[in-house]
Length: 296
View 1 (tube, rainbow, N blue to C red):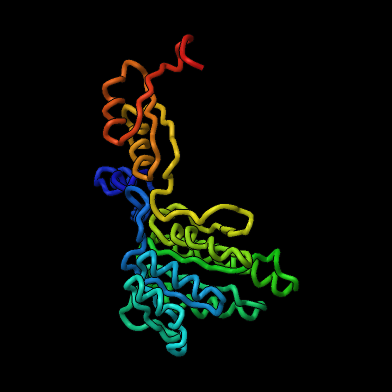
View 2 (view 1 turned 45 degrees about the vertical axis):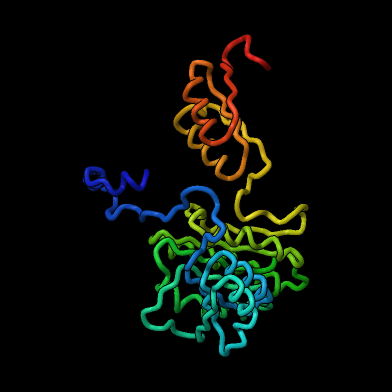
């Protein structure tokens, strides 16, 4: 059911008549258009934990436009953020451990759990997130980062790492009512440079329908780092039924992401198909695929 329908008064009356719960599901903040260079522009992101990814997180968050609020006892926790913060005009802010300051609200929480060694250390996860969970804005994001349990050499360490996923699933159910989501990311040692695209996606409105999921960042993938924008640059996409409707919208989005789009439709739809192709800088291919004489 679309957000527009949920806001319609007649639809709300029908839902009430059917005995379904009111209020209706939370309207989700969703991305519109192609990938942006700064998807977290001016968002307040709380960063906590005692892991090893401070420098990596500082670069990712500030480059994406976020305002990092770093939890720590002293200003020493801001050191990894000062350089990237100056470069991307996003000065970090230190937040003391414990209760959240009165009146403050945040858009996302990132917990770096790569340094957790034993089940007792999981208390840090609760202590960090609990004071802020009611300060999370609607359509908020929580990302918990750890190391893969499969890499642990000791049972206690493996259990601790596996516990991050269970905590994330429970948290996601708790915060889902206001449109917020929570996911976990497990980063192999040495794969930190590949974390950027995953974290940008999970903290952005593009992950509105993804929650309770574990993501694994490994060293298996080869090639250059994924681009932040024009992610389909240099690619060719063939879209069938491109003259109108879903096909037209798909062609427009693929072109906006940098792809050269070949718009395919029936010869009878030459005019509207050519108009779409011209507008997005693509090509036209007119074929009736149901015709026995169509090219194969």
